[in-house]
Image 1 (cartoon, helix red, strand yellow):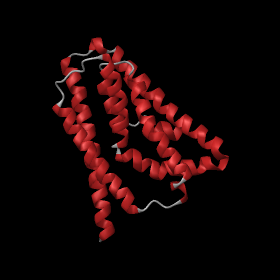
Image 2: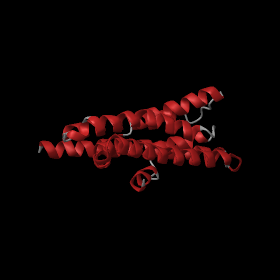
Image 3: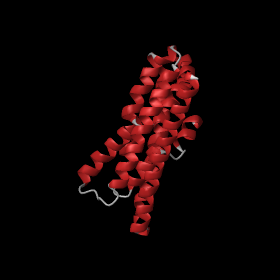
Image 4: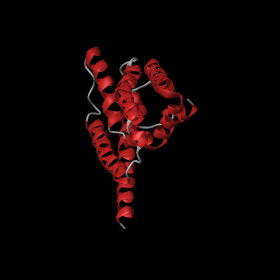
Length: 199
């Protein structure tokens, strides 16, 4: 739980998109966490049954960094382009938050790399207690995500009356900076790893 919280509480792309969506919907955090789980649970199960038995090749980590970094930069650019657009309906808001949780998680190279390294180690430890131990670990880990993003979104939504257009634009630009910053970092790190491997 402590290791999970250390990752969950660290500001990143998923937290940035939560800030953005929570400005319009108090349920955004819960829906984003559900979308996050759509990607995270299958990945945990895959690692539990397959990847934990093998060494993760360096080229896989490089590919994840390059592709994930590129996609995250594109998300930042798209967010900047849509900075003046507003959501129209509650239905689209709910669907959009769920989808945002899915694609932000899937495009987050840091998330994938964390699971291929630290996460795999945690799952290997959970394997000592069998399927029950793994299930408890997976459930507790995701509940940390769900609780944090739900509470964060509620706080942002409830504080709307204190926010003006300038503050909202500041949040949007913060999200853009997070997406592009993390994306560039992952892509550059992956490129450097590839260069050092070749040399």
